Amino acid sequence: MTSKRRLKLVVLGMMGRCPFGGQTWLYLNWLRGLAKLGHDVWYVEDDATWPYDPRADAVSDDPAYAVDYLARVLARVGLPGKWAYRALWKGQDACYGLSRAGLLDLYRSCDAILNVCGATVLNDDHRLAPRRVYVETDPVGNQLELAVGKEKTLAVLSAHDDIVTYGENYGLPGCGVPLTGPFRYLKTRQPVDLDLWPMAFDAAAPRYTTVGNWRQQGHDVDWNGDTYRWSKHHEFLKFVDLPRRTDRARFELCLNIDDAADRRLLLDHGWTLTTPLAMSLDPFGYQDFFRASRGEWTVAKDQNVRLQSGWFSERDASYLATGKPVIAQSTGFERFLPTGQGLFAFRTMDEVLAAVDAIETDYPKACRAARAIAEEYLEAGRVARRFLEDLGL
Image (cartoon, rainbow, N blue to C red):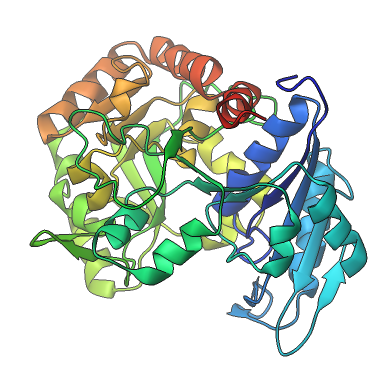
């Protein structure tokens, strides 16, 4: 155990609000890593945001689906009953999993609240906890907003005692992320529970894949005369010719793409297109997508690419854990993770093609190397131990 005593830790999140595979595993991997160290770990949602209900395909003021989802998912990973859901809207204060009094006692008695992804805007009850930690899983956006003087971002971050970021390059040579304001940034990376993400070698797996969103609006930031983009489609389009450039691999984009013209463009360039919605509603079925993939080829957000934050995604970690080689656009993560066998960082099309050739020359070796990186650098207990040590917990 990291600490000499058993810690009580509360993970704040949004997997009931957004009951999709990617969001769910972001939290489950943290919960499992902390629990493996012997700590008393709780998952809590406590805010005023309506959850998405897939039965209606809409956000809803009825938390029934979210509550049932949390109960099922946490029991499945060995944490039955270790959750609470609090619906704070329309003047309501309805608690599930724990009573309101039980939830407040949890905040008072815990050693720390970990606001993973910054999904929760802290309220007065959260301040009952002796320590509040913001775990920044999506770096750069906050720092750009601070640099341009966005008061809301300053207030959100200032409500925490510590900030721990996936931006492992922050403050190092080659990183252009502006670090303004009164904050000290500790570093971490995405954990993955290797027991729940076992090796899944398949020599006949047909396609390199990736999963996520195509266009996302509203998070671009103008700073120092440049616009730093949030939506990944800007980066995907730079490599739209990839399927035409190699006969050694086939490529699938499992993305939410609403525009028919975008879909036609990608299909005309040789991409296979699928949609993630149905398969991602079952977080354990979601894993099957990774197991059936040959590897991953993916891009990052322009913000992370140009400013070289060092970010590395939970999705990439899931591919590596299942023994699937990853070809990922450089954000500077190669400073911290070994590349050239199971994991490849690219900036140019030629580097993508070289990575495909290297993998396909000895596919079993590349798969073993991918899993080895997950074991050495991303294993949930190991990441959680360093995280707590850096916080002094």
